[in-house]
Amino acid sequence: MNFLIAGKGVNLYHRRPILSALHTMKHILIAFFGLVAGFASAAEPLNTVCPISGKPANPAITSNYSKTVPVCCNRCKAQFTAAPKGYLSNILAAVSGQCPLSKKKADPAITVTYARQVAFADAASKATFDAAPDKHIKEVRQ
Image 1 (tube, one colour):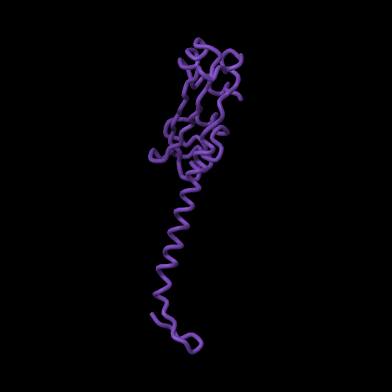
Image 2: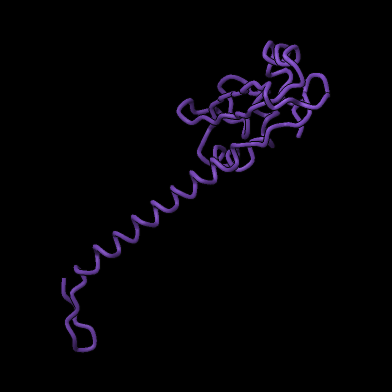
């Protein structure tokens, strides 16, 4: 494709691969930083107080908590990913088939997971937590 601009012939085809490569690189960078942000916000520091006994937590006695629920759209997924702990109550109160953030119909193909490692003062506290984790997860403090 040739155009005449100010008396000079300009071929626009040779510029397309450069623009396409820049467009592709932009998408790669967006995806990379999205993943990094997701990993950074997902890892909460280990709690220092046992959620069951209220005593200092022993970092050698831990349990892994995880709960996955569907959401309605990628916008809700992004909101959750940005601040997962802020939506913990919503996740715990999720109604089957309903997005816990927007209360719209959930899309089973789009899910979010709240996950964290929890430390306890002793094995008995860990056993109590493991018996009913959804009941006790909101008691986890730093």
